[in-house]
Length: 260
Ligand code: GLP
Image 1 (spheres, rainbow, N blue to C red):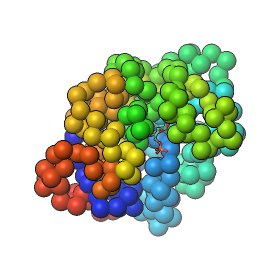
Image 2 (cartoon, rainbow, N blue to C red):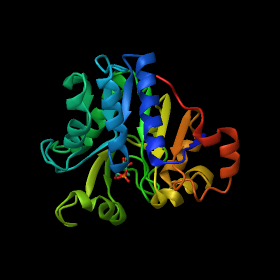
Image 3 (cartoon, helix red, strand yellow):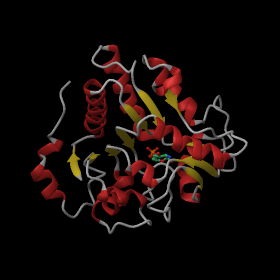
């Protein structure tokens, strides 16, 4: 794992966006794995800004999002389809047909999940996977106890995750219980992973991911086995790392920053 600790969330977010843009510049027909959540909002803002400054184009890229709620139509304001359209897709030059999210309204969600996994393979696999992390260590919607060998499938969300995501819905009862998510093995197949975590609320999950034992109890800890995983943190998210001084010695101030 490459662990880059920035002073501020803004610096970590901008670095994440630049790394993604740099990967697309190097390989314009990149297959990108994308993530949602509050953490990613400013990453996408920065990517849109880079696109507007003509520093990156997505015209040849393909995207696969990590997950989608079951039971929400694509047009629902709280669906991840809507999140991605509003945060990124409608602002950039990616063809709509090149963007993919699981179908939360499929009549057979298990089949929809298997089809999604097959579509990722058919596209040649994911070049760069963007990830956030849940307070309980989840990646995508792979909740604690998820098999580290899992593939895209239906998952039941924990109460903790539903409470964390309740802020987007009118009430807890309206917060979906099920989602289709890429599995941990699906994520591990990506040729490169970029995980961004910011804020003190993520510090325990980040410490478990980086320094805890590799365990299904902290699904993100599977990244310890990934050969090209970069973890971008702000100072608060890094605050529980026992070996923080070492990571900062290797990459002072998150320095390894990318120029476009
Ligand atoms: C959500 C998403 C994850 C995301 C995580 C953290 O439930 N399924 O992909 O990384 O939770 O979200 P946030 O950035 O809002 O803390």
